[in-house]
Length: 317
Image (cartoon, rainbow, N blue to C red; front, side, top):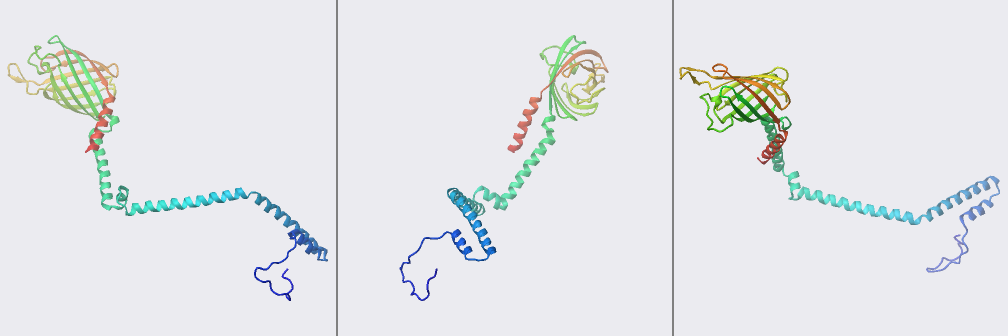
């Protein structure tokens, strides 16, 4: 109540005598009572009820003051942490952009970026070259070969050992020693019977047909093979024939004529690792029947080992 305007103004630090506060509900009720209209009185009664409901809601919210305060505090802490994280990220970005570290150099140094691209390209090309040279590591096969044969002309046993390397199914290498025995053992003048002779061959396979050449029993030579049922690169070939021709300049009949050595071989595969056959040695001049057995063991562990070594050597370059 502003009071009577005829009274003087209240001095500074003055006091006003008050009365007991009336509640908002009482005030609305008092006001509604002053209306004679039944309709207006009903309106204010409804208003009073609404205010009561609002008061109950506010009382409920007030009872949750501690929880609300905790939520607000947590949100305030989160906001401060978010600001700190943002400032840290900005500092990191600034250091990357203007710093001298490795990451900054990689991102900002154009020459470094070019050199990195060239390095990656070089590694890729090295891997491609290695694959082209040796073929995929998982396709490589190493087969240890042992052949024991009985030479009917000399009535002696001969032994051949070697390793067959197949980098991919269309190509192979063979390295071994033929007629492995004591070099002092007597032999005739036929190079195929001379002790401890090196064999080194390079060959190509075409489905059921193969051709190879190189050093055969320390003499230059060529050979062909045919597999009747399985491809030439199959782990087991049921029936095969081979013809080898080497020592082209061999002199026979006291040097009166030249006769290369021709060996014809018929081979049967019993198991993946076991073969048996008959070799007709020197078929074009002085034929001798030589039965034999052949053991061929596949060694995938060596292929994996050499593949790892090859990759490491390529990376070292």
